[in-house]
Length: 256
Image (cartoon, rainbow, N blue to C red; front, side):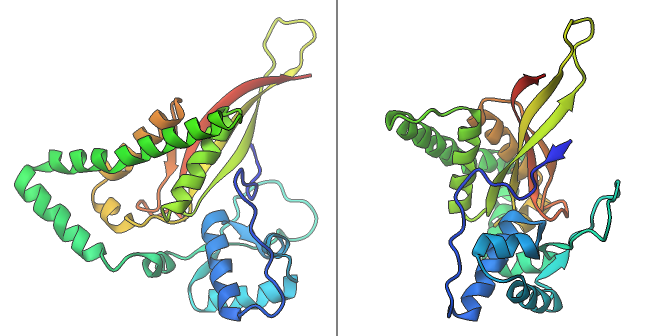
C-alpha cells in the first residue's frame, strides 16, 4: 500500500510571517501536527515557509514539554541514511485540547444511562451525528449549485473541512493500493484501487468515547452514510491511537 502521508485534500496552511509572535507559531505548529501528524520538521518548514532550524527549535521545546512525541516508524525496507523523525501529538496534549465541560458531559451520560439504560447512549450517539448528515448534504448541494463536480474525493474533502470546523483537526489523505492484473486478459496491465484515509487528529469527546464505544461506532456509520460507501474505522483516539483513522474506498482504476 502506497500512501501520501502528508497530502491533504483541503486547504493549505498560510505561511508564518517574519516577526510573528513565537507563541502563535507554536500554536500553529501544534495544530498542524495534530491535523497532519505523523509529520517531519522538513514538511512543517515547507508548509509554513520557515526555516527547518526554526521549526526544530520549536519541536525540541514541544517534545521536552511532552506536547508532541516522536512517531514510531513501521519496520520495512530502508534506503541509505536514517529515516527522518516524524512527530504526532502526545496523549497528554489531547487532554489540554479538551473542553472543561468533559466532566459535566460524563456525569450527564451516566445520568442518562441511569434513566434510560444502555440504549439511551446509543440514541444519544445517533442524535449527535444527525446535524453532521444534514450539514454535509447542504454543503454538497451548495457546491453542486455553484457548478462544481462533487465526486467521491470531493465529498471526502467537504467532510474533512466540516469536521475540522467542528474541532476534529481532520485531513483526507489519498491512498493508492496496487492490485494484481486480471488473470487471462491479454495485454496485462496493473489495476489500482483509489482510496482515502480520513484522519481526525483531535477528538473533543475522546474520554467519554473511551468509556462508551457506541459513540465511535455510530460516528463511523454516519461517515459511511454521508459518503455513500462502506467505510472501515482503522484506529481511534479513544482506543489509544494518535488519531482516528477511517478507510474510505473511492474508485478502482486501471493503468498500463
